[in-house]
Length: 142
Image 1: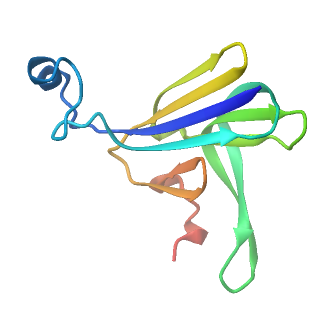
Image 2 (image 1 turned 90 degrees about the horizontal axis):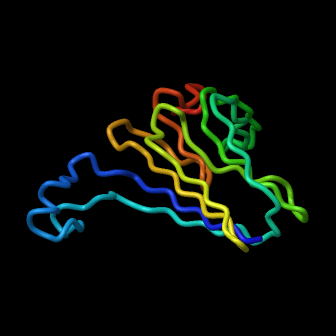
């Protein structure tokens, strides 16, 4: 099965009342529902998707000077996408910035939608992972 993922940053200034009154309930140029959208597709053969709440996510990498780092980011909300021919893929965000989510399984596809709150700054250190600034590892802030 394939898996399509959409991540939306909600616009806290979106007015449904304005949209209903002036644009048949739809967003407009001056009344956007989302500030941005990321879209991903998993190309391996997806077998299942599991949701994990309030879990730690291992953020690992290498600093510019070549030093390796590894930090656990706590309180994450994650979708684990399991494939038969590839390691698991994780998509998610700090629980504090998740507004809502949808996981839809259709005949030949999984669809994941993740809606993020826009009132708290966040970082996107790797594709598909969104970390609230207050939960980002302090050792990685320069």
